[in-house]
Amino acid sequence: MTYSMVMLIVAGTLQLLGIAIVANIIADKILRKRDIALATLIMTIGGTLFFNSVQYLIIIYTVGILAVFMKWRKAGWIISSVAPMMSFLLTILVDYILSWIVGKGLGIYANDYDSSFLGVTLTILVFLLPIFICTYLLGLGIHKVLYRQSTVDIVSRNGFVVTLLMLMTSIITYLLIYAEDLPGFPKHLAMVYPILFITFFLIICIVFLIINKIGQEREKMKKREMEMAQLRDYTVRLEEMYVDMNMFRHDYINILASLHGYIEKADQELLEKYFNEIIVPLKNRNQI
Image 1 (tube, helix red, strand yellow):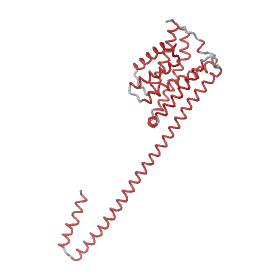
Image 2 (image 1 turned 30 degrees about the vertical axis):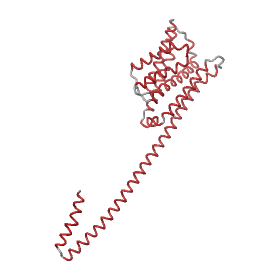
Image 3 (image 1 turned 90 degrees about the vertical axis):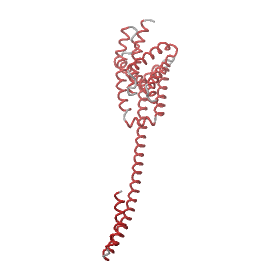
Image 4 (image 1 turned 60 degrees about the vertical axis):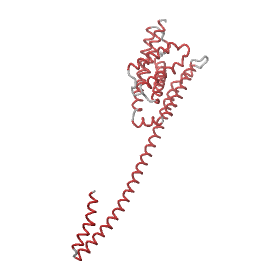
């Protein structure tokens, strides 16, 4: 293995480590530090062994490794699938945007550096480190939004849609990157890639906002249905209370009328008998 190959592996390992860290943030830090280190090591070894034969398919390999590790740590299938893909998409998005900004603004391109120690070091400092920082901050923002209670419920109910959206975006992004290195590909078209990737990101955000809005409307409808059910139950109880009150009033009037009759007749014996047979049982029943 040549010295230049070693330096390229070092740079690639650092990039994979950054992707794993950001994916772990999006997955609510489901992986431990040693899990991230082991996953990065496996991705690096696999990438080194198969890079020449499968080249861009190594992206699928690395996403799969992270997904397996997250699933191993008992993460849900949605987050195990979405977090690695989202991390890769963020890395690609930031990579193209920063490369375009640095290239246009400073006239510095990643291809300007060779695989020497100095060249790789400058590549890490000028490109990889800023890319990681920006991707890390975006990952924190996504985590903050993703793990709100309302968002968690929405993602859980629409997991298939979210996963399919991320998968389709990843495939399109992969095809665009792959086409860029094909012979005869117009290089000027690659200049619009940052705009395309930003558009993809905005589309994902818009779709997610639509799903979020639909979820909120469903919650409102469910809340209204619960309120209507409670109102119906309350109405039924009021009707029952009204019937009971009418019955009580009717019985109360009858009791008073009977007492009034016995009092007018001054029939103490019948009054006591009526009281013991009618009033006392009512009193005992109410106490129960």
